[in-house]
Length: 376
Image (cartoon, rainbow, N blue to C red; front, top):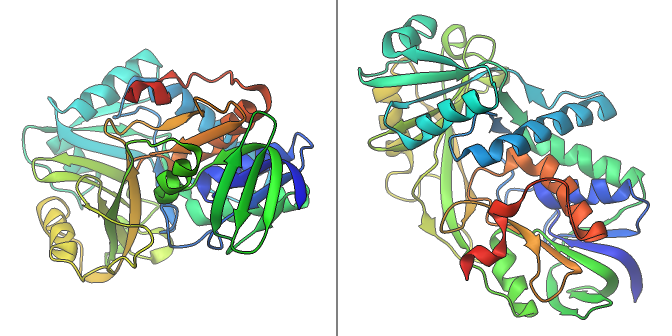
């Protein structure tokens, strides 16, 4: 049985970043994943994710978003690669929308650059958008898009260079913990470490049950798709990433990056899934294409035909805030879960926080919002 300082179970966005930051401390680290990340079985595939700083989900997220942005720039410097595209982000909704209110208030509190726009202002700036009267826009020019799978690859490469062991296609079958150590068995071997980090996405509760802990986590099926567009209207050099809070749902999307087409998805809704069962592919469920197409007809009518669609998983908490905390009975176990469809942008800083929690049992970042205790 091989001994480690820290085992990380789940080497997706949060786990891979945690592995990298642990590698900077000189610890002997093992990352385990039941697949081979980056992969299409969780929440981190699909090429791109939005990063915004003025935050519709609440002002408490802003300091973490700003720190995450610093760390994404740091990763770019470390690798010489570009992971962040400063396309700007346009949020649209009624002035009474809670997300719009949060964006405006957080921009004021943290002195973030925001341009508040009328429906006519939006149409004038971006002719590919049609916004009904009564809606406003909040445009944040310093935000943009992250290349999600490429950044996970980068963290993986750096972690390996720094001596981290990554074992893929290793499904965890048991976890046993005490005050001094944690033993993890997989379908191929058993391992022991002083500490454990669990970042297993939709599989979190299956693993937490081995540690006598259950959290209110609900994995759901989500869809997104790419549509053919005129690059002069919707290309990455002229069109922003976006989020629209509409009466029919909350939609988000991306300009056509490298001429791949306009990407759009729906943030709310979704059907509960069992992560161990094959998920239906895009188009196999009623409304997959129709829902996204109707949004584009209403708000971006110059878009063209569907090119292709994909599915992914959100793991939701009841309040849609994250879980980042130490196990209530095992302080040598850190847990990160329930990122509720808005976590990827934070994976750089969450990875760093997890490394601090597991080494120091504390972090300098404010994560009170993410405490397990709130579910009691």
